[in-house]
Image (cartoon, rainbow, N blue to C red; front, side, top):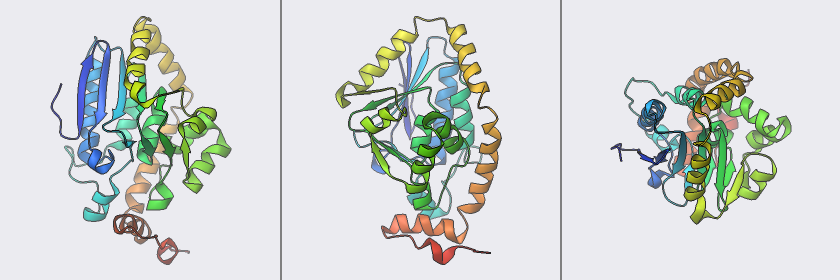
Length: 265
């Protein structure tokens, strides 16, 4: 098993298993976490024994709750990073570009940026205890790139807008019904099920899988442009009074007063 601080990475048979390992923060990611995720996905890409990647979370409570809002409230950003950039957009594109299936094994809460990660996976397997939803407008954040545009391709425009505007949470069964996940299994069988999916796809032609993934992606690759603009806009928004209020209210466990900080002009 490779040594990282915020994640673990191991290869089991044909599966590259990446586990978000910050259970004390509900597996929320900071800039360092994103750097480590990028490194692990790149390793899985280069390892010819790896035929598919499993992305999951440590513990039973959370798959990933997105960007670490407490970190943002403390420092105004997501902490130091290797290249002095918060590279979440790079991670999104890497998950799409890696020529191997990415399987999200959602073991608990998948909200905010964590919800975006599972949406961008090629398939999602969910524990029957998993919960899904968005939190951006509740904490002064958003993903106006793949996290919203591609989500609409997955569940449809009406449902995607409901998910983002109302920030509700949905059960694994509800997620299955809306086509947000591929299969729901008992929580204690989740990782075994994901490994079984890897074993099954490992019997298939890797070159055919590569072409197919690129073909599927071609239909939505233009959304990368939206993603670039969205990340630039988010950088500006999170340091605005309105964006900062969302992070502060979350850290202080109080309702946010966004209206008091909006520039209505």
